[in-house]
Length: 305
Image (cartoon, rainbow, N blue to C red; front, side, top):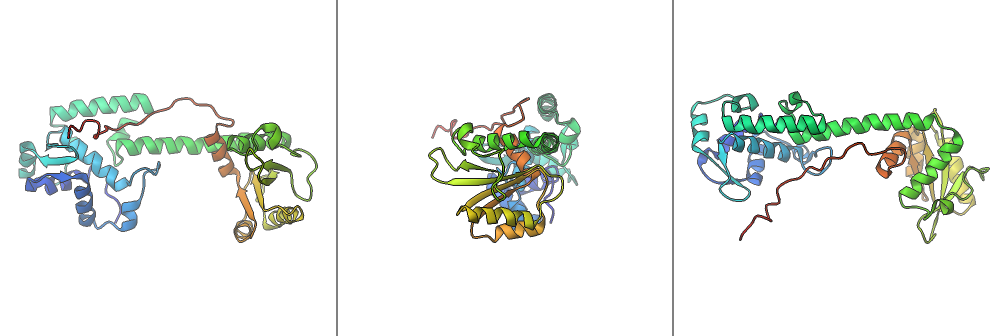
């Protein structure tokens, strides 16, 4: 079954807590996972950041909203219990509890309007996004992913418009930024000179030069096929080399990828989108516009036990 959105989870959470007992987030997650018949794969599906399961995140935010509306209380760390207001709400036998429903409570309105205004001003997330199926954290992460994907396309277009010489220099700077080669002068040996049987350059694997990585850099529009990769592998064998990186602004055919995956020697294929991602992560050709730190309360800090 598809993972329910956080608003859909509000009423089921309140019903679980109707027994008057204290419940932990883990108990709520496990109980509602069974109620919604979620598969193990669905339960393990992560937020774009990869830091937390989506279902756990949605349970957490639904619980937070119910607490802000006064339907749940937190008697002690990491536990919730239903309040008198929560019981009164259940006595009304609602068919759904969502943001619109919770706006009847002044405490929730104050919390929600403040959170919405802050999120809109700080991250560009629209109020509509915060009122929809996504939690605020999901909306922020998905907005970040959209910005990143757009930036990947933009960076790649810029790289494709550069000269072959600039592309070769870019490759060296990128590999140095990723921790290879030691210095730029050490890294770029033979790069930009006549290739030796399909090799464009060589770079040290580390600052000590314990091993050498051979480089092939192609600023192409058409997909790179298996023959080009085979040519590069043949050149590596001619140098008795064990490691190589083939970078291109285009893509690799399926045959080329399968061939490289089955080689005894280590040959890494880096296509255009992956190249752009490495550039972004390494700060090559991009600059910071803004940064946001998402923080949570450190419950251990406030523990007096």
